[in-house]
Image (cartoon, rainbow, N blue to C red; front, side):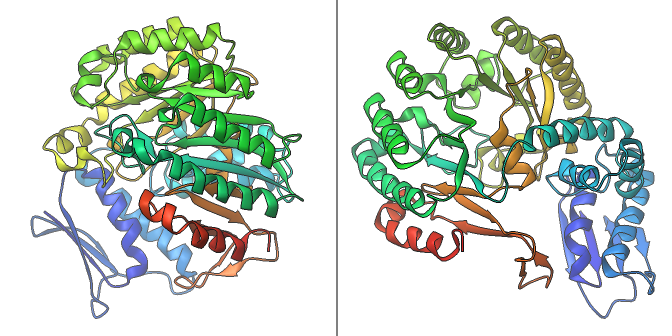
Length: 479
């Protein structure tokens, strides 16, 4: 049992996540008490291992928070006799920090040195982050942030729910009779966005979920036809559809996607180990993945992404190597390697395997290194990176791509440089406000340039309240 005693709530979030990174399997309780003498003290099984008494009164609150975080990290490092690759970074977008420094004209070496000192990040992760930030910067420079935007279309249905998943998705069999109702509401919201955004340039479209290919071929055709009729696609640089689950894909559906000029698709095995596919609830075989991938190639798809998850239940480094060998044979254009994250809403979070999964830092590190090695052999280069809360081993997710095959939308969702308008159940719109138009955050009091507009997650509620979803967008869209 770990108890964290904190004088100010301001320090609570970072303190919790730094301690959790070192002690992933321990139950951690936080206690806020403004009457305490110490800024922070940390007890393990009622024995104090960390005590931070004071802060520099001449420094800003933000500067003091950084120093407190460093003190917690260094004392946890001594206590556990281990270090954490991403240091005191608790956010999910490390490359965003590096990108800002590059845009300010700082040299690469100065940025890397500052990054390591400021956040106690390892040299290896600082180098990876810098390589990706440079690549992202080059790709995003072709976009018009002020007049451009991206569109996300959410299809919240899947063949089954995977044990690691926490996304908004519902078993398609339960909704077969009502998917047309959902599409009717979705097309209504799409029409509103198209009408409101006529003066803007649509740069990327991403159809995700869920699994969009759970829709029937004629439903996909109807939806994509509506998108083409609603928007000018002259400035469109990328149109991605998450085909995702091989057990949802047919030749007819792939032909629909090809006919509508979809430029990028994902066929996501997560692993090429049959025992693991069975245990995580994916009702397809390794052979299905290979068959569908080759069918997509035969139909002319020249930008195919494949997702893998490192650290799934029961897998070891040899399993990962075998999976990567099979992927290498298929030679995808993109490979996204995720470190397993135990999401609060996922089935994995409710099982006894959670502790085992969160405590396999060494194995995960080998798997991630192996994936990077194989990506290099396939001439795939790292182009985007993000981290998640409760990620096993405190690692990261990295997207690799061949030259000119990087997923621009993936970078945009992480770097928050351009507005992303999202439609569908559970979809989250992010409006990026222009410079000088920032608004004050009610909680922190800080100025912020991002406005989030959330659609309801429940499909029934989305269908019934579609006019309300549209009205919410109308309050902010391009105002």
